[in-house]
Amino acid sequence: MQLGMIGLGRMGANMVRRLMRDGHECVVYDLNADAVKKLADEGAVGAASMQDFVGKLRQPRAAWMMVPAAVVDQTLEQLAPLMESGDIIVDGGNSVVEDLNA
Image (tube, rainbow, N blue to C red; front, top):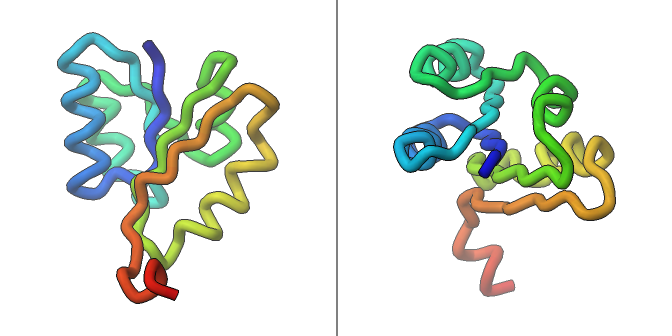
């Protein structure tokens, strides 16, 4: 299975490592190019931009976002227009508890 991961902080990067260890192909993107390079050196397919990320995913695409709560909306706004019908976006980003109770 191929899966794309946006957000390569502690949680996202470790999820990619576990997925790759189980034989899955992972395409990775993060604003921090060093984080992308590190996982690419470990066997992931690195992407230099959001467009590059989507372009490296096979259809139907599966993209998982593991980004901080403060950037979930803007990341989704960049990603969604690049995706097509049948593609999947998983929002695994952090939430602010107060927002959930609103």
